[in-house]
Length: 174
Image 1 (cartoon, rainbow, N blue to C red):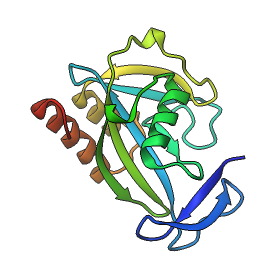
Image 2: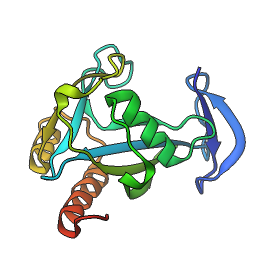
Image 3: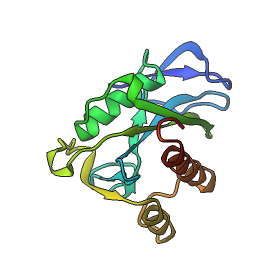
Image 4: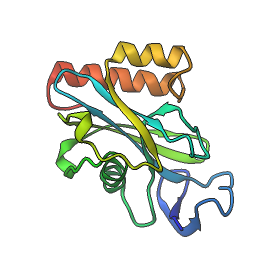
């Protein structure tokens, strides 16, 4: 059972909680979601294919991430999801915050983290992830255009592309 904090329209905890999947969030209610974009020293992005047994987006290439559980802040949720899904251990200071996007019933925090790992050494959470691969930013655009990567929307992918480019230019911060 996964318990979520219900947030208000400003992203603040309301004190109310809900069990994931037991009801729909009402208008004006939100929960926190995190996406993590691991990248390497060459600016390659580590992407993952969701397991074909998933209810939502089965077998689709998609961002690493998920919902924060009750009591978690954004960075803690990002660290947990990265470790659960890919087996990558990190510390908070390794993450670079790109931006918070407000969605229909969620606040989506987009994070980047520099990792130089061999994908053969990753411990994939089989219930969530079936495959991983390193790709460049142009390859990501191509996969989205071809419908082979989950389309989170134009604003989202502009954020990802611009943030990655900014990181490569500045070298350490987004």
